[in-house]
Amino acid sequence: MSSDPSFPSRKSRFSDLERLSFALQAAQVGTWDMDLERKQVWWDERCRELYGFVREVEVPYEIVLEYIHPDDQTRVDQAIAWALNPKSLGDYDIEFRTIGGEDYKLRWVHAKGQAFFDEHGNAYRFSGIIQDITSLVLARQELESNRRHWSTIVENSPAPTAVLAGRELTIETINKSMLQILGKEASVIGQPLLEAVPEFTDQPFMAILQDVFRTGNAYHTSEGNVYIKVGDRLQEFWFSYSYTPLFNQKGRVVSIVCTAIDITALIEIRRQITTQQPG
Image 1 (cartoon, helix red, strand yellow):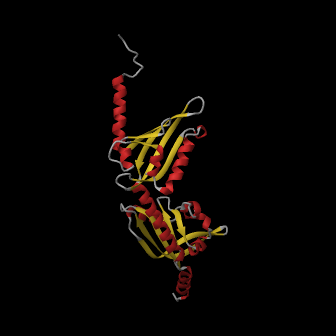
Image 2: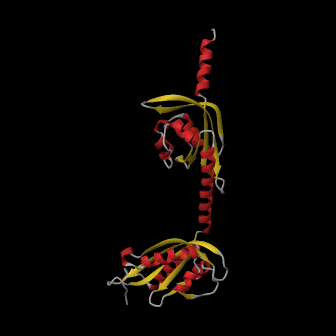
Image 3: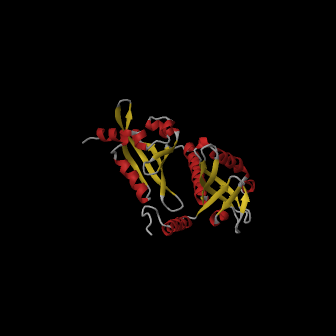
């Protein structure tokens, strides 16, 4: 008796499911499924862990909400209600906190799911995956805290100062003194440096900035020239400036603090003195 070769065998289907299961386990991703008729939620082992349960359990949906942080319960409930509305196309994607039902541990999780509807627009299935993102959220919060910290320092610095983030050297924070030097408004915050100040392209200090980002070595010079557009023409300025790298927990450079003191007038005076000296 021959079988249709285009139809996967039971063995191959089982093998595919097994590989998927292994992949989910390796990624520490849990799965969940909601019985919409009975209002019951089924969790796999990993999902149970993320809700703080060690034993196999199928729980009513209302009870599930009790193991979600109080500040997130309404948001999660609304997201699920919207996913079960056919206008949403069944999409469910949300981050929230769980409080372990048995271990009382606080966790941040990312849940993604899909609701399926019949021809009448009634949801008949709702299932998805969930992953622990606690370390990611804590790192994100620490980064945001550091940004606020540096923003306060930069804004109150008496010296012209800016913080440039990433390889594109995006202007993350900049104080009024530095904006005045560049002849720019605060709207440049969030823009890559070369987009905000295109005349900096191919100027020597740009290569130095990239080198600081690549090596993590700070740089300082007592005098260096920079061409800045004033009106319709480029004008030469001289600065005593420094580039100080900022690192993340893994020791990688994430930003560079740039400070610059305008010494153009001093350079001009020195040039005049040199010119007036007898040869």
